[in-house]
Length: 171
Image (cartoon, rainbow, N blue to C red):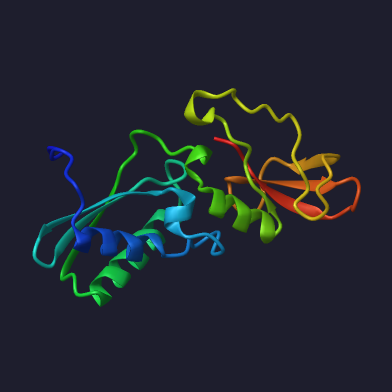
């Protein structure tokens, strides 16, 4: 498929993007697809016909089918007769795509958010060699397992408060 030239989004496209972006992630329901940064694009192709671009957190993510079905349902409910959700792998998703609000919600629900990997606006690259406990804020944490309930999270334990917690791994 030939990618059309970029255009200014219409009011309808902005509304549909808000709706699609508000869909909760099936594995991390405290964050929306927009906050997770996996909703890459949305374009109205014709009346009642829309194309959505979705980039999974990693190739083979089992949640991408559920994400697509949830987006289709929300947009069908809004009156879009034909919704095509395409998986886009380039550029690949990274944890830098998670919004500040998404990071806050992860931490608030007991999941240590990933540390930023890229410098913002050309500033210094943040370097954090430790994972901060989302319960007490301590940096004295131990890796228990490289994988947790999902492949994108690791299981850690805080040595200060002794609570186990998930850490969303940096990608």
